[in-house]
Length: 240
Image (cartoon, rainbow, N blue to C red; front, side):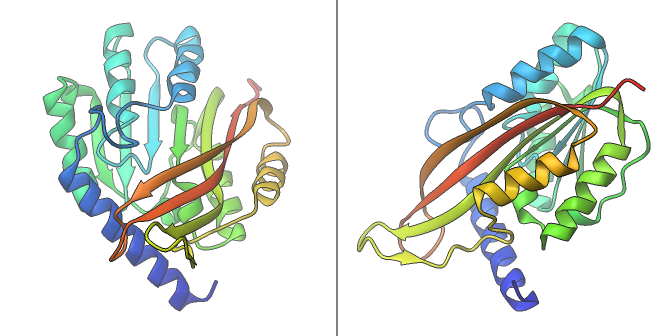
């Protein structure tokens, strides 16, 4: 993807998500933000079994679809802390609002950051969640670099939970015409799996699945359907 194509895709994604976050509430029926991903909460239980006060990083957190339920669980289990990052200022503001709304503001830190260029402190996070986030970097090389830096930031025994949309296509609902998918890194399913397996070869892979997803969107001038093969991947860092 050329730099111009990347910028066009990034602009399209930013516009779509900013509009969605303005118009829709998390944890309410009607959008894909209506509930957290089951795997995110399932793996959180494994994290809490090891540490009742973990530090969690949610990358591309948006307004808190996963972050708020995680924080509520942390609060109930002990204390812990959650850092939610997003490229969009609108998402960061919404996450702060939702942390107040759901009574978890004391343990939630919301900050603006680009996952591709973020700095992550060594051995800091017990659980890192990156759902629908890593496909928004600029290249496979950038993805490998991000993963390496996230691994550096993970405590021994910590867990990474990743979902990536691959083979993304977008179809106009009125005509059935397929249009060029506006996403920054549109890997094939096998490319994504191979890259993740290679990157986590020294970790214990604890989940590796694929799922098909289709979502109706108001992303362009007319309604479209977003379709993708979602790779679900989780791994645990060695203790030593």
